[in-house]
Length: 410
Image (cartoon, rainbow, N blue to C red; front, side):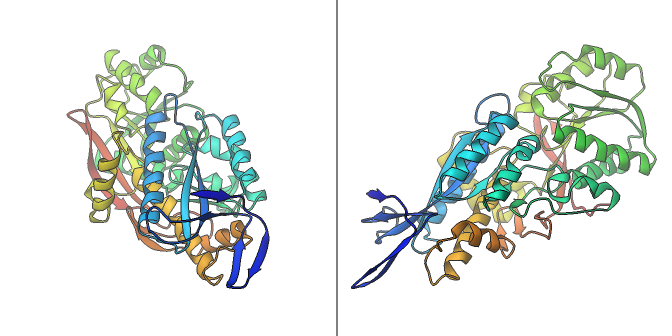
């Protein structure tokens, strides 16, 4: 199969018009999956940590995005379009994420980007993507300010970037849900609060604190830790002396696991609770004292959803790595871009438009479909309309779902 670089021109032939666009390239010859003629190659970018401590989450995301692309090609979801995935590793570093954003922008075949995992990385990508009219959709970013601005706590919500969407709900929803579950369901009234000072962790902890205290709970102590640290003996000693019934941690599993273990080894035999960044299959592997710890995650448990059966079967057939927390959401995020491309092509007489990035972006607000994780659509801020949340507990070294609810922010 031979690729010819895309050009902004229309060549009129005696048999009709062949359109080559700035955001796609024309594949000549026989299509491998569909045995059809020419197809326009459309690239979907993907960004997440594929190396380092958080790579388990990133690799599960990448595999899920790749599966969506393969499925769309196999099923010929968009007639005349062949999708391709361009994955880049951001190492969970905002500076690397910013560099990756520029790489995606400079590749004119890229019409949308899935990712990243970390809200702090997303902050380095949002404006460049916005300036380039390049759609970004994250299955994992939960920082509320990414869509609604810093004034959201005071009710002053303003969409920050027209190009940013997500299939994960916000920290406002997740933090409130965790506080309500801990206070009302687990009957825990005294909590020690810790966060890792990153955008995600600090925002999650703040949302939890506000709701927990509003409900009547007491924060008996508060600390900040470095996400790179693994020695938490000093903070564990503080927790032990404060009479906390639980610790709430705003952060991710690489630090949460040793924190939990050292808390229990210090004599503070209380559960550690965290958000979706902690709810990884790696957490109990890294923590000998994980039993009874709690976590929340966006969406209902994928393995319990009838809508996810085919996805799970295909994923397990194609990949040896776990899909992890964001597999279903990543598949849906990738499919949202595919659906937006489909709308843009349909509105342009079956051809990818010359201004594909702009047209795909315009189509994103119209996207609505039944996905792996449930109904997928977006509100006026680019946030998912699906606010289903689930609480989990470690039982026999595995996360077990305890309670799910379509949660509405207080």
